[in-house]
Length: 273
Image 1: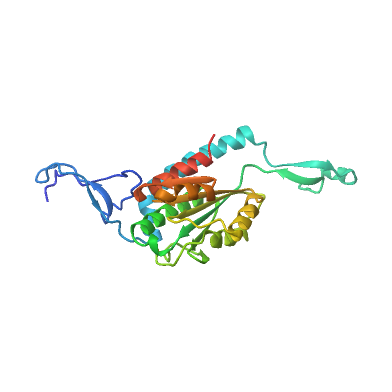
Image 2: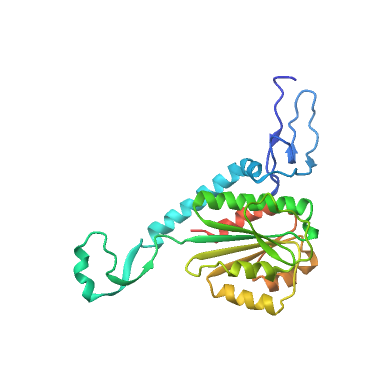
C-alpha cells in the first residue's frame, strides 16, 4: 500500500460509535491517492464483547468521567460541607471529645462528603429491539457503565421484556425477548434502591406500556426513595405523548445512532454545576 496514503478517519457522527479495528459504524474515508473523495458510507455495527466495546468507547467515557468528576469536586468544595457529625450532643458522652477516633458523641451523622450516586441501567430486550437498536443500546450501556466505574459510582444492569433480570455483565444482552412491560424491571430495581443515595434509573426502550396498577405502585415507591427515573425512548414516534405521560423525565431519541451521544448529554445534565 502507498505509505503516504492516510488511514481512514474514525469519527463519531451524531451518536454513532465506531470500532477502528473492525470499521463498524460510520467511517469517513479521506480522499487520497487512488481513493477520491467519495461520500461517507455507513456499515452495520458489529457485535462486540463488553471488553471490546469498552476499549472502543474509552476516549468518550474518559472525557465524560473527567468532566463529571470536576463537577463533583466543585460540589464537594462549594456546596457540601464535608463529612462531619451533627445532631443532638449526647451530654453523657461529652468527655469522649478528647478520645481520638471516638464517634459516639452526637446522636446522628447526616452530612456526607459529596452526593453518592447509584445508577440503575435497564435495557429493553423485547423482539422489536433486535438488531441495530439492541447494538446501540448495548454500546450506550457499556459507555455509562465504564463512566460510572471510573467515578466510583455504584451501577447495576438489568434487561427486561415481560419479565426482568439483573445482568452480571452485558455480553448476554440481546433483543430477542417478548413483549415490553416496564413495571417488571422497575419492581426489580425497587428492591435494591437505597433512599439515602442519589438514585438515577435509566429505562432504555423502544416501546410504551400502559400505566396499570403495578406500574403506578412501583413508580410511587421509587419516587419516595430519592430516585430520578429517566425513560429513554428509541424511535417512539406517534407514541411520544404516551411515553411522556409514563415518564415525566422522558428523553426521546429519533435516530438510534444518536443514543450514546444522548446518554452522554443526559448524564451531564443530571450532574451539573
